[in-house]
Structures are given as structure tokens and as C-alpha cells.
Image 1 (cartoon, rainbow, N blue to C red):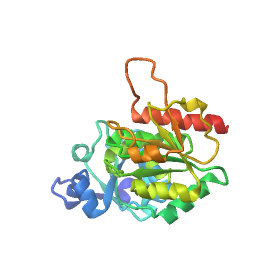
Image 2 (cartoon, helix red, strand yellow; image 1 turned 90 degrees about the vertical axis):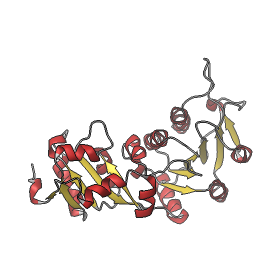
Image 3 (spheres, rainbow, N blue to C red; image 1 turned 30 degrees about the horizontal axis):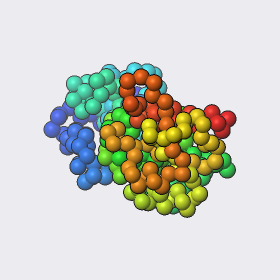
Length: 278
């Protein structure tokens, strides 16, 4: 094991400004003001680092490590320019937003995509194949949004357009539930109007997921460039998006419930695209 104390500075007081910053960044207002956010967890920080997401500060507690690869990651993050600090277990747990912390929390600057950089990223990821996008409209729960990123990564979606957001993409619970795939799938935050204009310019068909559709999602041709649109947990997709959609798809509901969790529904639709294209 690399001797971590040689590359880190100890913090023992809860009144330390660095510790207070960790606690402040749990709040959306503070993240907006400072344009920084938290990344907690080995896998999350590893994926952020691999995606060239800058990391300014890394806090660690060796007593909480769950594996043997943490020193390698810490060294990698240090070489990328991060400041490294150690915290005692009790103080680290007070700063963590997890029930079972694994001893790593980072502070990173928020980076927002322009449409030009988003377009470049999705076409690079598509590598000549028809575009495969997701529209996440007004998703309210951080856990659902993070899970949608996780499914998008697994299905190799080329990009996500987060429209008229109701939850902060950089909420710690989005990062956590995405397991770091927030850093692997290109995404852009925009208005619905901007998203629809982009899809039209790129010749991408909009597919609206709604229980009121006539066709099952397995009966719709999804092999050309498509954007799967998923709406808010409470209200579903907006009327404007429903009207603009070229295709409408429904998931059969055979029991008493009238809809699925939005993250579960997203996973089904994305893997239908995968099935058809394979």
C-alpha cells in the first residue's frame, strides 16, 4: 500500500473551513453559488477521474476503506492536481451522506456542456450509428434521475437531455444512484424548447413513453435515430412534448398499478432499442 500520510494533510476539527465546505455542498443553493459539487464513493470517484472530471479536493479515511485499490485511485487523483486531506472516522461519517461510507469524498467543479460540445460528444460515442438519446423531462427525484443515467450507460445511450429540471443533476444522491455514470454518459441541461429544436436539427425522431399510447413499445421501430422521452413521476410528459412526438409507446400494465417507476420504465424502453439494433 502506498503510504497515504506522505501525500495528505490531516484535518481533525469540525470547524475546519474545508469540513464546513463539505457540509455546505449538500445544499443546492450552495452548489449553485460555489459551482462545485460532491462525489462520494470509490466507483464514483474512479469514473469521474477516468472521464477527466477535474477534482479539486479529496477527503479520505483509511479506516473506512472497503478494498485494496483505494491508494492507486488516490495517487491518480493527486497527480491530476487534487489536494488530499485525511479525516478521522467520526468526522468523516458526519460529512458523509451515505449510511455506509467507504472513506472517499471529493469536491469537484461543476462543468456544463454547450450544445456544440454535447453534439460532438454524442456523435463521437455513436461512431457512425443512428443516434440513441434520452429526454428526461422534469424528473423530480434524484434517485430516479441517477438510475436513469445508470441504465443509459448500460444500454450505451449516446446522450441525455435533461429538460426543465426539477432536481439538481449534481445532487449527491444523483451521483450516488448513478454509481458514477453521470460522468460516462454525455448530457446537457436545457429547456424543452431547446431540446426539441436540437432533435429537429439532427433528424432524431422523438418517442414519447405514455400509458395512453395505442402501440406497445415492442411494436415500434426504434432502429433509426431516436430520443426516448420520459416524464415526471407525478404528471408524466408535458402536452407540448406529447404533441411533438413522432411515435408514442406504452408499456403494458396487467395489474392494479397504472404506471411503472420512471427509472424502471426507462430501462425497459432502452433495452428494447438495444434488442432491435442487435
